[in-house]
Length: 135
Length: 135
DNA sequence: GTATTTGCAAATGATTTGCAGTGCT
DNA sequence: AGCACTGCAAATCATTTGCAAATAC
Image (cartoon, rainbow over all chains, first blue to last red; front, top):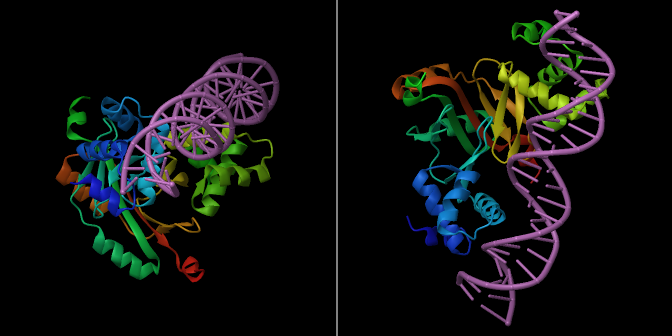
């Protein structure tokens, strides 16, 4: 993926910090602020948490990133893509994408409810196979 | 609903503050901390925010309440019941339950993924019919 | 009577803001 | 050149903690 183009298409300037944020998120799939901060500091020791917050917020505002809210945990962020489901392990915290297309369901509920639908999220959580072993 | 029984069944003591919290949430369906605090102060002017947080956390821990996490907004809380979907209006903030049973879907994904599933949440958001008018 | 809960005040944690300097286009 | 972005420090907002008094059982 070309992050420079992605930023420009969303009307944002290209900075090394932003490229770093995007490539870290892409590599992991989803990241929370704190992990992201640690990760990015490896490449940009000078980056500040304020800059990270500002960039995340800007990119969420222009819908380049999507915030994945989690009950009882801090949100994670992912690069926007087609609506899909998420699976969280409550023990190790790993968050995975599920290949489950939500488009049709969204369209149906939009029709039934008369809402103008903007977003659909399906979130499952439980204990992953690895963590089940460790009891 | 009998809140005293509900509390006892979950191993918690019955206090007037807890009864107030539960009846406020039940009346509204879902509430965030701040609305809840304002609402409860009408009946218990002396209640403190710390007490409210402690109780919410305790009741979420014993699964009497469920936290509904929302992207970009503070969580809301509801009394635990069968897994159902939620519909949020991004403009007015109203959160509604949808009569959409998630049990079968959860069972299927549990089987496919080998996770021990604990929870499933389907969250849709958009603009409600009323708010669409106001453009 | 004992353990829990409450409410206050203070502490901590998370996020945002203001501003001077720097970098992008 | 002009506007947006960065990084720091400080401010704000959200949540938790410690403790003494009150309450539940």
